[in-house]
Length: 399
Image (cartoon, rainbow, N blue to C red; front, side, top):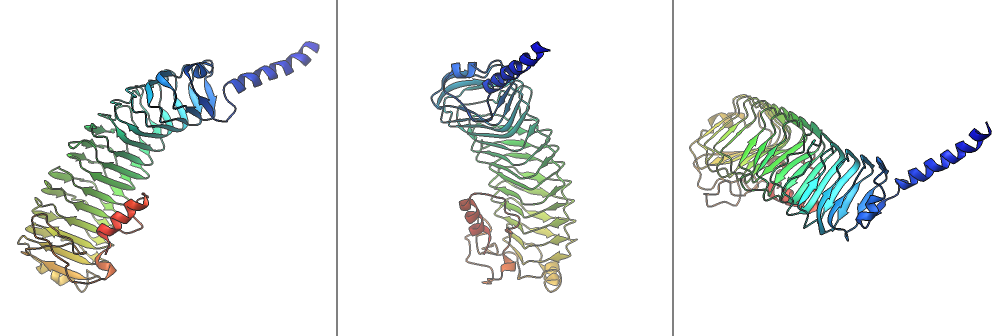
């Protein structure tokens, strides 16, 4: 009994020392590989791990399976390789920024991170996540040398931001079914191909500068679905029934939009400057809570199920479509300012912007300042962005 009386306090003290060696919840700052080697016997590190910008060459986190915090490196531009052979989980953010000489990541066991946030890693070509990340609250990959997103195998995600990765040729996130925040692709490789075969629902999906988009399972978006400056010729979402603001703008080769199940647009619906688009047909569209604003070079416009447009209606084209049906709706179905004009030399959007890149432009459709005639983007559906981005969107789309 006497042995136990003295042994237990000694054991507790030893455990306390061991725990302290693996962190105590404060930030663990790593200034050299030898600093990291002190934690080789730790399966779990308590607290954030910060890699100092003075680290050089290959950096390896040995033995550690879990970091109960973030793993961050800012401006360590002399790190060439970063590896963690046993690391499975980073509870908070895995953040790398300004690692301009990093050529290789090797995290073969990692499968869960709080957030994945990579920025300004220009020569990194692959992620090195062999097992694949299946759990992440959000993903942001900006200005890297990645050629694919192999190693990201999420079922659900918050935000998913993929921008300015000029070597990124393919995005194939097969397992992704739901996104609770913005999905945004912009400024990547000019012929980027995007495949989201199982994405069924989300909040906002914005696509810029891509050559192929596949969303065959998409059924509902709570916020905006927007396509700007893309090079694909056809867009098909056969199961989409409902979206917030819906935008097709400056897609120079777009000749076909197939949304056969679309019934409701909870916001504004803008189609403009898609000069190869000859036919606009939405057979089941019944309700648009904002404005309809279609302009271009189309010869056919058909909305046979339309029952309620709570905003304005602007339809102008250089083509020879018929306004007859729409004219009969302007006192009942359409509740805002109305204009329909075929075979016009200068089709315009409701805010007076040119509606066709081949036309000579115009100064406005009817001179009205009625807010119902604008509202292609409603503030309720604008995703959270930097103030400058919000200003730019409002300037472009709202009167």
